[in-house]
Amino acid sequence: MPSASLHSYRARILMILADGWTLRASVLATEAGISAQSASGHLEKLVSGGLVRVAASGRHRYYTLAGPEIGSVLASLASIAEPFEITSLRQGTRAHGLRQGRTCYDHVAGKLGVAITEALLRTQALVRTDDGAGTGRAETDPLSAGSCANCPYELGPYS
Image 1 (cartoon, helix red, strand yellow):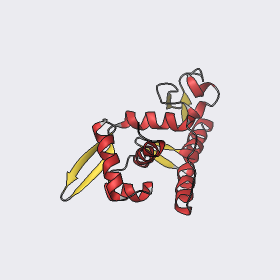
Image 2: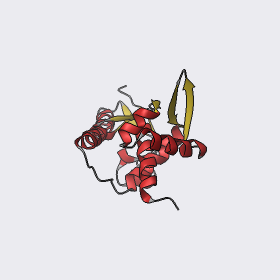
Image 3: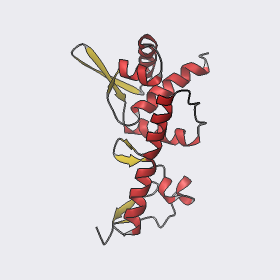
Image 4: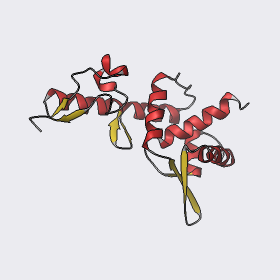
């Protein structure tokens, strides 16, 4: 059975890719804090598991999440997972930046995404179409719904 650290490194790689970027293995290794050889092995497992896609361009291989549904699952899991221990200034800076604002495929997330959504709702440029009766976290925090299907919006009268 793989150790927890193996899963932790794979989870780090997936979370790095969750912003929708397509990155080389060397960049992923640096960001995850592991060797290039280790990253290559983890990426091979993630590709064979259908979580990550790889595309060759010249002598480089570029990795990305296999699709937006993988990003959605990662975001849901991240909301309930215990945070990993930050052991360097680089990790702390990156974690802070991700909390402030990031993109996740087709939307802005983090505190910036929440602030934008709140402003659009407050000015009625955006209105909820489910009257806050969504499922999951939408019932207690309407801006934290798992997906637009659970908490849909449409353009408001002042858009």
